Amino acid sequence: MRVKVLESKPNKVKLHISGTKPVIVNSLRRAILGLVPAMAITEVNIYENTSVMFDEYIAHRLAMIPLTTDLKTYKMPEECEGGGYNTCSVDLSLDVSGPKMVYSSDLKTTDPKVKPVSGKIPIIELQPGQRLRLEAKATLGYPEEHVRWQVGNAAYRYVFNVKIGKECENCLECVKACPKKVLKKGSKKIEVANPLECNGCGICKEVCKKGAIEIIPDTTSFIFTIETNGQMSARDALNTAVSALQKKVSEMREIMK
Image (cartoon, rainbow, N blue to C red; front, side, top):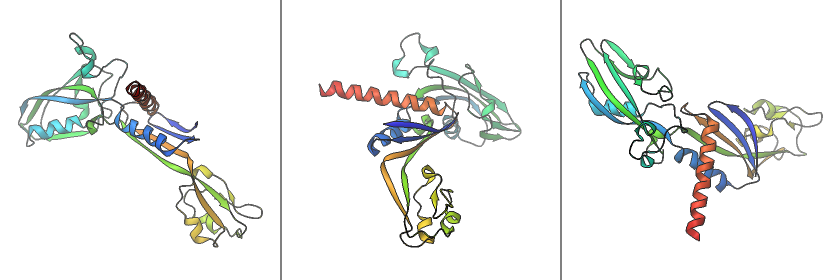
């Protein structure tokens, strides 16, 4: 297997993975979607709520707010023993009165490293005389258990081999039609400029002479994209997913013995 980084940003990584099979790449995708733990609010104690919204609705909205995650400090709840509370959960609180639009930035946290990814997420609008006072607890969890722990998304597609045939008349119609700018004008016939950008849409084949262009998917080569919501970097999510896969493989080996 060969891996080449095509794009690297804090919350997005695009890779070219070649020399492998779809089942391997799909396993990595599923690991990112289900096996990368993150922080999310799991318990809410509402002491005062005179708004028009039920307690349950507010608790659900709080649970879906993405929180920045520190996997080096915090442990899964099942790994915690007596006295390990500080490394297993984070307390948050909210105490606001109307008239006011309550945003995620109004949540107060006991650990600055675990806070809402964005402070602009609306929670509820309070009218004059209304008040919302609560305490919440955030813990680590796996997205395969609930989507509130999902750090982002991952997807892959085949790399397509674009072949220019003898029938090509260099008419430039395919160059103009290609939405990904994969093709360019050559000296005698159309040339492939950006082969990794081709998504196999086939528009170029529709506007050209039959047989001028052939698009063949490479079932051993993939474009793999990871994009997180800010709870952790895309690289951290990828590394955590790989470690989770390695752990599962080791467990399977022990079972097979």
